[in-house]
Length: 469
Image (spheres, helix red, strand yellow):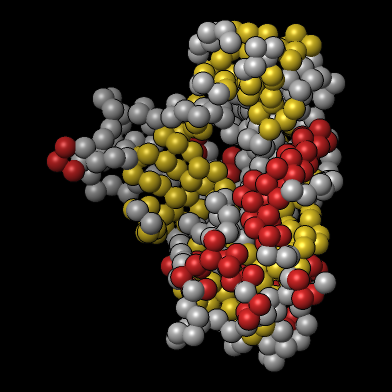
């Protein structure tokens, strides 16, 4: 094998797509190169960014033979060394979904031993070809930056901006701590863009998170202070303007709430600590720091799919693991009625408060606070969960705790149908493989483009216990 080094430019032809927004090239001498900013089938000049004994990573810096699926990236920062938030802006939207479908199929084959054809479906608002719409001229004659107009743009309702030492808020470069001054993020929801987070300085701040509840229009800003320096003073670079001591900080106009983050807690500085989200035909109180689907169409679609796959009946017992603010638990409670039972399990304090508030109209629905693995492991102890015919889980990217697999596989717990909502096809496929090893069967599998322009994809897998076959 040749002696490769970071910074070297080589010619490669990519053949496959890989999980994480990469395309794969295999050189004649055996080196496997994972390349960003390209499309399968392209021949490119790629600059190596990392070389190990097993593989190399690279950025495509010149396209020698372009794929017919290549388009002009709408964002001027979507290039090597630019913003790392989007993986596929240079690929036509239908082709992005095809690439994601291939990745889901790859993971199911590799980790679960399943041959499964997958289709990644568009969510409401993203069916069109996409594009940008330029706003009117400013008084000085300057045009504002292009505004997203659907088709995979303008969907992200939560954006966390990192703040540079000079107080500029931007987004990080790929696999880097460098902060890029993007001006306007084209995948950010227009209501976030209108807050103007990137148009002002944030002295003494390490990050600024902007959230909009698309249904209600409420907006919140979460500010994380910078690292404290000697004497406990927040670090600010030389020349950075400071707010006058005792003055009222100036917050983005239009923010209904402004909160300060300290560790895992949020303190309201203006407004309240939650937003009103709308899904499944009703409003849900969701803390500004709590999980909620970031695509405006995702919560409704995923709830419809989960309810359709679980098919709850009056009197059923159902569990909602990693329940967050209780979206699935609430929908299940309505379906099982007062003769049934719904139990949510959640470890985050604020989310538990929200879930209990959101479920208060259904006395047969309750929420256990605690780590999911610990709650499931209580067995015959106080607080143990009753046998449940139906289970839904929407875990973090790391996937299901092993205790969840063990709980589902134990016949005495009575689980017949399990709806698995996942934002990571690799951990989902791993967990499906574990359940298949216990005799379970994969029933339905739906995949949704809940994160256009990025490599992420949202899936709902339905698994059936052996006794139900």
